[in-house]
Image (cartoon, rainbow, N blue to C red; front, top):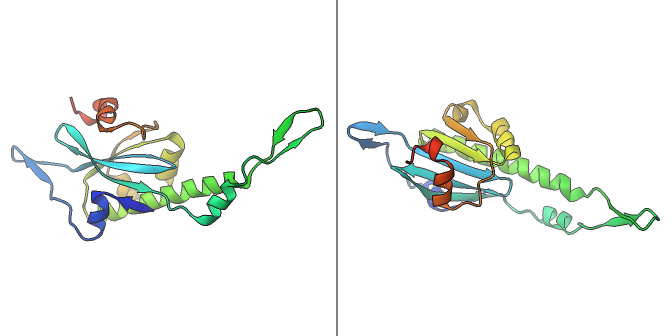
Length: 171
């Protein structure tokens, strides 16, 4: 898995800030992980807004790219209709999605162990959310305060905040 942004720097030894104090009360560090099979964006809730702190994407491997070039093989049944055969890239695409979910779950477990967050909100496409649940350790699952099975990966920070305001208390 490839990491970019502030979380990539934290993995190179930059430490996360300690839990913030607001009016003498510790405020938990909340991460919002927005994912689908193609990647994840990780936000931190800061006061009443979201800050993008990094992105994760699956590693591309040469074999999957070769398999994806086989798209489009077809055969004719003789009646003039064309039928597409089942393609091997479909199996590879599913395996890649599972690998990415596993890698993301391991990253979250490592981040939890390093105390980089206190709570997590998972927002993912339904199948990705199921894959993440299956791959996550019990330790990380205890940090989850909300799970939303929607694909919101294309939304910017403001639109995402609006879509999640009931869960995030951004109002």
